Amino acid sequence: MNVYYDEPVAPPPPGEVKPRRRMRVTLIIIGALVVLAAATWAAGGLRAQPGGPAQSVAGRTVNQGLFDVQILDARSGRMKLSSFDPAANLLVVRMRVTDLGDQSYGVSSFISGVAAEPKPGKYVEPDLMDSVGVVDGQVTSEIHPRLPVVVQLVWKLGDATAPRALTVALRLWEYGQSFTTDEFYWSVSKQSPVKAEVKVPVRLGATS
Image (cartoon, rainbow, N blue to C red; front, side):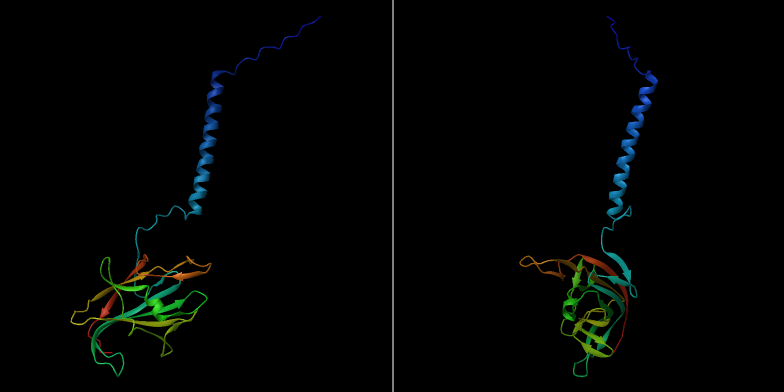
């Protein structure tokens, strides 16, 4: 009877083991980096995320989420907003506003997302009664989708001296679901984060 024995298998030389292990570790690291790069790209790339409101100037368009806003100019002085009003010390800012949504909003709703910022973190709301919208020279209280409206915001200064330059804070409009219904809607409040701070020179001594 013939008996066969398996020939002993010699272990690989020590020099072959380390390169294979190093190759395996290298492939794992490369795979992890690929996954990390994909996740970073999906989250917005390798760009640094801003830590506060964007800084802008008059003439540039700022996206508030629901509205595109381009601040046109600012003026101050003793003015009469209409022939029936007494002259008062006012600060007036004009801005071109475009509704990017699918429904109309009142000018008063838009104004809720705007404030003057005389000092960092201190906000002064515009006067709701005197602030109006204008389309082709006609006063309007509505901002319709994709129809630019010039909104004129008014601050009553009283005895205060108008600044030579003004910072306008534009708050972020956010789209979300109602807590009580299934409805989704755009909203903004005084607690909403400031999307952009816009520096605007003020023309002093205006009379109209």
